[in-house]
Image (cartoon, rainbow, N blue to C red; front, top):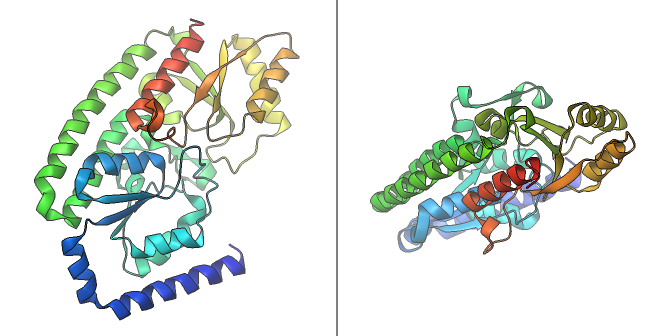
Length: 315
């Protein structure tokens, strides 16, 4: 992190703490009684989740919009200010928001409550990753069963924050779990439509390993788990050879990753005398625009599986 950035964060933290002190703990407590608790989330997936469980009883402010890559996201001074005033910060963790780690640590030191959802899951649910120094793949939401576990963690955090609305949070969570169970069954059924030997998912970066494990796909990405790692010529050549040898029908672009790497892969395959189609656009590290079918987690997962199956079956 650059020296200038560090000083900005330090000054903002000092300002935030000074303002809080001047307002007094009593004033903050009074505000918390009369106002909805203010929760700051990082990714669009988490913003959607907290809004579903919190309903009308919390105010949720997401830092990242549609199409934003959390691997590369750098918090602005405004983001730091928002987090310093929040009652609770909910983020994915597991190094997904890699450029925000220092800010989260400072917020914790300043007494702001935080929840790293991915880091609350049992280790048996996580996939190891050498890319993150032996830590874990952060893309937990692509296994719907993992997202059900995330629901429980968020529910517990909201109840601790606002116990007066425990019953409502529990009801919202139960209804959402039922919806996610149906979604999980749907994805399983759709995946089984594709012959086992054809269940190969090739995308711009390695975001779909949890999806592959849960629903029986071999997954390959040009870039690593983090988009901060760029694909090289050798990566393109190796994957192009794999596509030709295995006669893969389609490869996929991602909404939060530039298309140029997948287009380069398609050209490399063409140069080998084989045609592979770009089967469509998948949502990986971000949901779609708010108010659209892919603006929710459930809508995004449905879109992804439908796009994958349609392309691989050449429907």
